[in-house]
Amino acid sequence: MGAGVIRVLLADDQRVVRDGLAMVLGLLDGIEVAGSAADGEQAVAMARRLRPDVVLMDLRMPRVNGIEATRQLAGEVHVIALTTYDDDQSVVEALRAGARGYLTKDAGADEIKAAIEAVMAGGAAIDPAVQRHVVDAIASGPPEPPTELPDGLTQREVEVLGLMADGMSNSEIAEHLVISMATVKSHVNHLLAKIGARDRAQAVAYAFRARLANRGARPGAWRAPS
Amino acid sequence: MGAGVIRVLLADDQRVVRDGLAMVLGLLDGIEVAGSAADGEQAVAMARRLRPDVVLMDLRMPRVNGIEATRQLAGEVHVIALTTYDDDQSVVEALRAGARGYLTKDAGADEIKAAIEAVMAGGAAIDPAVQRHVVDAIASGPPEPPTELPDGLTQREVEVLGLMADGMSNSEIAEHLVISMATVKSHVNHLLAKIGARDRAQAVAYAFRARLANRGARPGAWRAPS
DNA sequence: CGGCGCATCGAACCCAGGGTGGAGACCCGA
DNA sequence: TCGGGTCTCCACCCTGGGTTCGATGCGCCG
Image 1: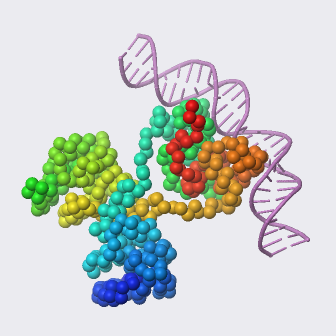
Image 2: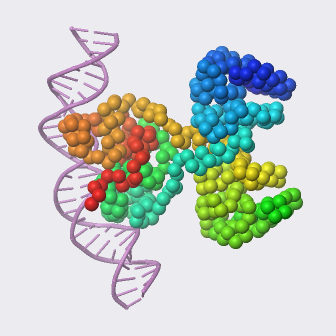
Image 3: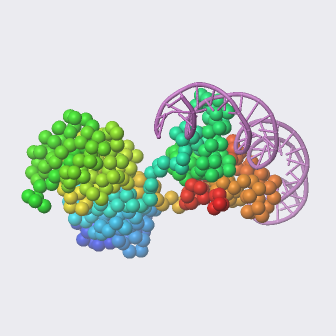
């Protein structure tokens, strides 16, 4: 990192905020203000030209708002939202857009610095004042009902279903579970009947919808290297 | 509230942690340890009997784990998860279960106190060390509209794949698309080769992992009523 | 003790699904 | 104009998967 200095770009439509922030941040060790933009369009352009480490982005700005600017810069630089608004809408939207931090404007210099450093270290920083909104979004957002216990499925049947969802054939499942293929077929037929599926393809779909299959791996997880 | 004292219930399977926490919290002004439980079941029972203001809940506990206990107590008392684990799974799950705070076990007394007070004030408190996971959950969770263009799949092939994921047979797909079954087979074979799947079951799994299938409907969506 | 559910196997059957090879029609870019 | 890709279709073969009718051993419960 050059001289270990973190270069920051400021984006805010209010002059006083920009200048004030520049003053405050300029006094901090290890932080350097690379520039300041007055609207989202400018912010994106300057970020790409100046290549700062972090962008402190106001969400309410003319022309292109901070959310959109954040979206465009996500992946290029670290973005920390900085706003007077603490309504859940903007917090969640900002994070969705790719912001890794969220500060309200009554944050102190130390808090801003901590946030910048946290983000630079690969972490995130959310103002305590709005953490509640984030928590709510998580708690209520995705409906979630966890791994609801399947119909009348047996332990073994669930296991077999999981392996089917992993793309294994009957014989592979047999080998994996160290049982005979006849047994596997038996389990398969039983679970097909229970979940009301006609074939293993429908069973796999059921497994994913019932969240019994690990959606983790990349799509083409199976298939040997070469 | 009485004398302005916040009553806290501790839930952790490790004795040293319970006792140590009780010591530390006992020294803090305005906080009183109402009791301590050694497993989730006990935690739920004690919480309902003692009616504490806050429960500090370890997630990894015998009998009933902290997640489940949190779910049961959500709405009754404020729950703060307290764990050594900082993997995204447990953070997100804990918050989904209704926890309003999340602390790792290397939190200091002051941090714990701040978290308790934040939660009591209607806020939330998430350990900075795991905020990243929460942000990721928000950023990647619900949205994901970019139905990323699959491998080298054709428009038609994607369409067929989607119908397969809906549990349709080749002949049903043919009927649905008003084409012959031979054509469907052709499409199927092509897409199987492209995505590296051996059979339609693997293709269905691929469809779900690649988010090409609508996970919307309940698991047993197909199947006529009676 | 008898009955029930679960897991384990076997054998035989049938067919949808997958593999192969080819072909004609269309559109589009070189 | 000539490929190249896509969508459409046909005929043939063959295997895996799903179906049916069994059977055995085990653990649990009334």
